[in-house]
Image (cartoon, rainbow, N blue to C red; front, side, top):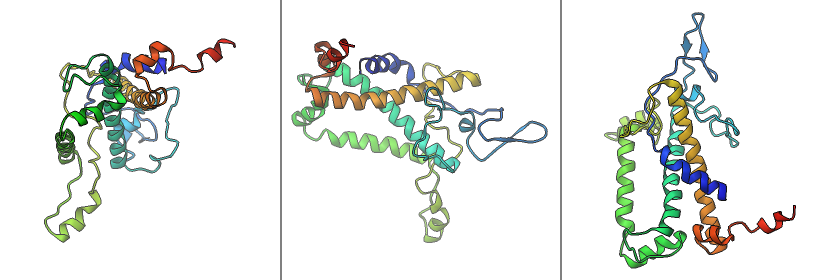
Length: 244
C-alpha cells in the first residue's frame, strides 16, 4: 500500500494530458499490408493497431475477453470509459489523501477520514447532490452530443433506421480527446504520443487500484490514510515479516 500510495501521488500530476487524434503508418497488431507495403485497414482504430495500452508487465490485459471480436465503435467506447475512470481515480486518489491533511474549502470544519467526509458534508449542507448530479449530467450530455452516433427520433421509420447507433460512439473519435491541453504537453511525434497515452492509461489504472485500496484500508483500520501510515497500522504484517 505504501508503494501504491507513493506511485499514485508522484504520477498523478503528470498524467492529465488529453490525447489528440493520431494516425500511424506502420503495420501492427493484425493490420494487413498490400504488395506496396502500404497499410490496409483491418477495420479497427489506428491507436488500437499501434498497441496503445499494451505495456509491460501485463501486456495485453483482457482476462474477460471483452475486446474479442469487438468492432471499432465498441473499442472506442471501452477505452473512453477506461480513460474517464482513470482520470477520476487519479483526482480521487490525490484528493483522498490531501483532504485529510488540508481541507479549507466548503465546510472546512469537517475533519474526518475521507471515507466519511462526503456523508458529513451532506449532513451539514442541504441537497449537495443536486448540483453535482446536474454538473455530471451536463458534462456527459456534451460528450454524447459530440462523440456518440446520431439516432434520429423524428419518426418511427428514422428511429428504426438509426437505432443501431444507440449508445455507441463514433469510430473516428479519439478516446479521451476533449480538445483540452492548456500546457501543450502532448507530443507532436508519433512515438512520443504513444508513450504519453500509455503513461496516462497506466497512471489511471494504478489510481483505480489505489483509490479502491484507500477505501478498503480506512474501513478496516478505522483510521485515515495518513494516520494509518504514520501509526503503522496500514502494514499489519510488518512485524510478522520482520522474522524472515
